[in-house]
Length: 338
Image (cartoon, rainbow, N blue to C red; front, side, top):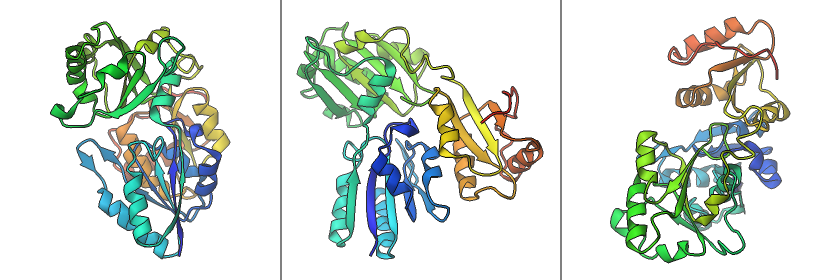
């Protein structure tokens, strides 16, 4: 009998995963990973590890939860070391209780590895803390991904002297603002919307509960986006320490023959860049082909870096083979570097 590790990957930035989570990835036979997990983390796995994508969008699931549960049980019964890699912390809106229940029903050993949850990471990378002496003495984590008539039945009092963090459901932003105002929250109460927090593509929009929905109509934010309500948002300056990193906002496609090392990859992310490693040529790790196709279709990387001479032809061949004609060509180009 194998074992299942339910691991929190942290919120976006691949270096936010714990050392324990990294250790389990390094010896995994199978990894079932979510959409909000940075796929660079898969570079930590052994060469023989199998990858299974469990990505979920608000109205589109690659795998249903019942199927994920079934796969966890199946691979463990085959004697494999299974990592269920989840974004943020698996125990905060991560449905980890359902997976634990399924494993226990089948007598399968498991461990849970906490991760840095989105509220904590997002606010820190956006330049404000969730608590502050004299302003916020408590933090409430809630899901906005609910039926409209279920929203905010008793959340309004938690904003007074506290900070309210909504996971998911940014499409309900206007309803949230209206409900809070109906329940007596001042219309000038600060709100922050944090999109793709801790990634090099992070965006932050601040306003009030009376104005923020109109602001986002002019420039919509996409999922994933965190909604934070509270006076602590006034701590944010025009930009955060993260947004001030030298490569913040730069999207780099690192083209190589073999997988880049963890140190080579995080050299870019630690400077704020949004990166992906595209492997081309016969020596590439072909497990990453499917991941690269999906990831490059979802996210653009206009800055292409060839890590060595003579990769241009292999790059074009890979793009043609995988019908990636809609993906930007390597121009403009930064100097060759790793």
